[in-house]
Length: 334
Image (cartoon, rainbow, N blue to C red):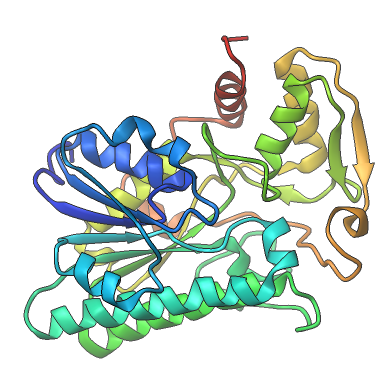
């Protein structure tokens, strides 16, 4: 797969984001020409400054909500990774209207333009980044791609994210059914790694940043929520394999790791691996977010479908992931 992207013109929406910037590095190493578009609402120039002087990189400040810009960029690309979206539980809880608009409208514009090219005989495959949030609060211990999506009341702003990303999935799969536009959907499960910020509620960077400063780690509720964490490098390898696999088109895949850990255990691991003596404190959801916040107690993917289609064996275990985030957060190795 080393040279499979050689010479390909690849568009990454959300290119200045955490995942987008790592994806750009991966593709450049494999000879792709990369265009990064981002409105910097949650992305950061700090993530991509080191890339801008490299041959084969084009930086385009702007929004995928701009139809004219979308048309221009699509006309100059061979492959699209659509990562632009609202991110983070804290942002979603506070801004449900923007969450819905920023998730649905750009995807609609992008897919419509790709479909237009497809109908004219120029096919441009697309990867649509989705999320484990689409499962809502499905009570199953392991989530499979064909499982029901179970949401709470519309009075709970948190569900606006999962519902809007589900609409993205319906749009992508609808275009595949209607015209065979090759679209692949990946549902991410807690992707973490260097350059991720804790500013929008991402738990691991938030814990690590507190620990390296010797500050208390704030664990929400009772800390018994179960999550799985995957390194961004493993996730990028998976989605790039999917985009090079013809049988992946028109399908949805869980993408991540399947080792469950409680949030309290994660906090304890961070304290242990930083070697600091930070305290662990508990905070109610009401204090962290708002009075009507509702959480998901367990979120663990079934990766059978992914492993049946590509060769997927994550290189990073949870301890490696924590250590990598810690190294990035410190001025020198710990």
